[in-house]
Length: 93
Image (tube, rainbow, N blue to C red; front, side, top):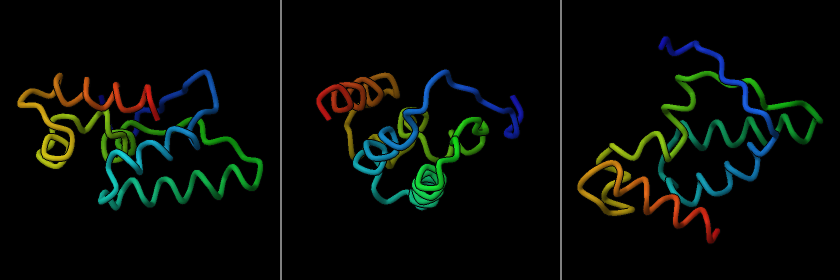
């Protein structure tokens, strides 16, 4: 899919998800920028939905489970193992 593909989720959990994402991937500048934008939008009472695929691919730690950075931080040789470690951490966050 093209990077400009819009993603519409059915809930407004972006701010709480961004908090976990910053914990999961604290050195990701794309995520830091996105989290700042989310905070500003929510403070102004604006929605954060929709987003676009390119932003999610750059900022969402679950979609970065195949990167060397995420594998090093969360373990796993396969993206599925890294993803599982992230999911377990999110469940107890």
